[in-house]
Image (cartoon, rainbow over all chains, first blue to last red; front, side, top):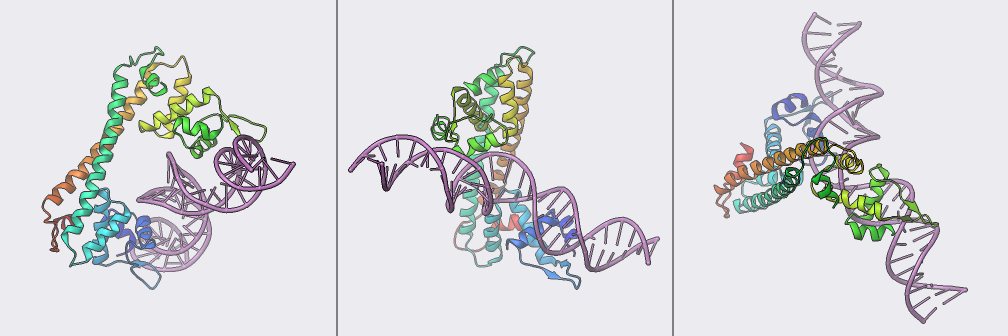
Length: 128
Length: 128
DNA sequence: CTTGACCTTCCCATGATGGGAAGGCTTACC
DNA sequence: GGTAAGCCTTCCCATCATGGGAAGGTCAAG
């Protein structure tokens, strides 16, 4: 499989596949005689794994750790769980921060007429 | 006031103050004879405004729009409210996305023993 | 054999921030 | 008056993950 087909099959863009290779996240694939990257099933599985980990909000560095654990058939599930729990906590922290911003803003907006008059509690609140 | 004092007074780092100036978010201040930036109250108010807008999750570009509205004494509050409501929706969308990730991972993690055995539903779920 | 759709590498941009170097001021103290 | 510490200046580079695009090589279908 060429890189374009792999991109279509995994949802990871060709650009990103090359980038992941360049930073060592995935191993360099075989090359055709013309120098084209040629991927086999195993690499495609890895890329799908990467994409799913990214979809779950893991950084590329964390994804690398997960990938290593995934390939290590003798890992302890505790190591994986620890990584996951830490990540869950971070996700929830970020979500809470965003919601706090939204709540503050909603509060300000609820006092704003939203008509053509100039006075505006939102700007007053920010510029206080 | 020199840039360092302004940084302490507004919570915006000196680096960022210079950067905001360079991108035109804030106006270039006066300079002392030696070339030091010298800030007056008005600029400090602007920087505080910027910081609060950033704390509410507005991008620098949105912050620029807000700043313009803030300074325009004849703006319509509807314009401000529209910007704010759009931003609230984005914040909530992002928060929901993060929470969905956390929920998925929590689900996977809840089935993971987290001991020294290797089998791990978290990795299985990601690598499925 | 040409054309179009691939592929290659290389460089640049994003957004917001920080780090640090090299050099010039200012201030407080001896 | 000199010196050292702590400011300030500009300039360049790094981060994180991604995309854009140029210049050039390759492959397959017509």
